[in-house]
Length: 117
Length: 110
Image (cartoon, rainbow over all chains, first blue to last red; front, side, top):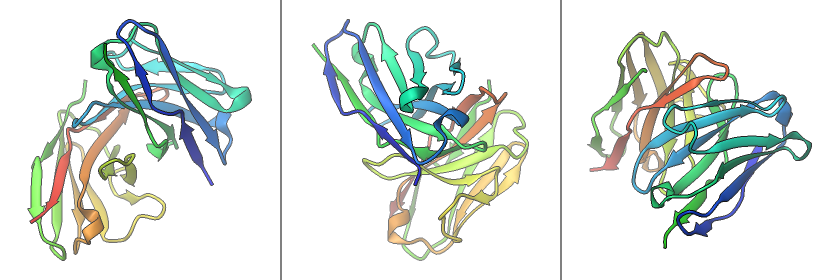
């Protein structure tokens, strides 16, 4: 069974750093792209970027390029989304999703990130 | 950049009725459009890919159609569990790709 399990909810202060994770299982992690999607409270879905764990090739939405870093450790089948300096506007739920070749066919359960002083 | 516009923003229907949701692209996306369903507190779920192909495990009452710039998601005979928010999505220049989501249509119980 394909599963993407994300790390738990986080609370941080503005200016702090954060790295959240997404662990894949039940399939060949290195052979499928993993994307990240933001959902701000009460709002729609926004694509942030994507990574191919096999060689760590990445692609970013222009809206998020330079704002976050996407990485992966294929040895432990885990992808990451990282911020160096959080802002209050980064408060959102973040989803990872597997790109199955036609679209995002499997999703993680989401990680709620709250940034507040 | 391709923009996806969904209509209506909110659709109020009763169980058993037929739902028709629209997604319009700002330029042709050929057949490369997907639909997702999201219920409160849950992750999105892939319903339809490449305009008309149902994803694994999706009931036959969900169907997609369209090509170019105009797409439709149809749900025949609404079940109580179908009331949710629906998003269309397009992928271009893959890999690695650029992904765009529509703003969503909320399907609510009348």
